[in-house]
Length: 267
Length: 354
Image (tube, rainbow over all chains, first blue to last red; front, side, top):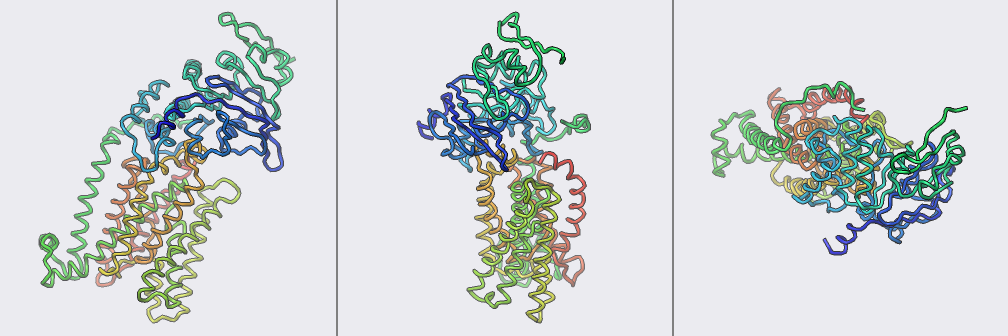
């Protein structure tokens, strides 16, 4: 392990996506999307179903290759990075990620050491400590010895977040991380992600959660960015009517002062 | 997501997973020694086990018993150990590579491909002498590789791969190749062709001789070492295609290399033992039930288990209908066929996870 790779792991990553497009089977899903995130910033991707949020996220973590545009991590072209190198920078919590049966929670979380190890390297005591710490951080410490396949949806989701933490990324990409979680665990996971100090890119459906936990929001609709800025700038009755087609009032949160969406009955 | 049935199922009060590995390895090592001694002791001439141990431990050469133990039975026992371990390991690896519990070198056509390649070399007359020592395993390797790639490509066509597609593609390729092998042997009008057809399609360990053990032992030894070392990337494949990718493993490239390695091992195995089925299917499952799916524990347990299983199966093949010898593939299929059907019944549950 060289000093350079150690330094590389530590820092939060700056993400710059410029004109990212994605088309498959002649259907264009993303039409030139620009998104940037400064190191340590938490950016929320919001928008209706089918607006291209997940596709964009996949372009960021590299399982899809954009058909046009440029994706930069700390100024370096992400397309030129090896899979392993990219996995040391970006950790992913995907939607409904399945893991084959027969692994314990501890073993699933330990997969996060993968990009930092050579094929033949065994996990050492330091790796195991990281795994235990990450599981404790997401409140899954007592699940460590359980079989992953036997967990509830919410428990699995927390273990997946722990696996991403074990990966020690500079950028966390989370696709609806609050799915399957009860209110308490939703707030826990989001404040944990915010508190890590890494850059985070989250796809969220709940606009109130997005406002509360993101520094900036990017609104996608039909594969285009239709708004971006702070929650105050983005979450407005006009945008909700235009993008989601729902009537709503936006009031300041009584405690935090952040925008709070109150949906109105459809006319 | 978790079915209520599994959630409410009482948790097994048993040995913790971490402690099971040394336990399983110890039990299997003892079983291996016991099965090997039985393999050396039993046959047309029965030799008392105490005497077998004496002969083996003292390395004593002269005497009728010693000659039977060392020259006749020992090579066969060693070949069974090598082939059993190799088949179980390649089965374990194939199951991880195609993310399907129904994979095994025989069912995916690799063994039949290797048989076809080997038979072609023999019939073309290149199978004898020094050339044969290289050409035979090389042709078997090529045949095994071609079959594996064909089955995998056919099963994957149109996007996702289901168990049904995989098994159908495997069975179809396997039948075509077996028919081809039989056809070539019959047309070649070898006086021995019926026995040959049996050997290449059902497998047998009867041809084991000391001077032929070096090649399979070397290739297998190397292959086994490499496969054991691949535990980490094989585990990452359990996270799924996208999961593996985001954890730093390029699944496509890794799979291609692993296919080459598996084909190499299967090709060499089949060149010396014919196509023996179901060892690579059953043993990994049994091993997974004992030590879980993490390959660091699974691979050594499967290797040892495969060695024990094939030793016992060969013992049955030699002694059950003595003086007639049953092809060992018949014995493994008689046990493995029903096991396969049981797995198929269960596989709807495993498929939703895989």
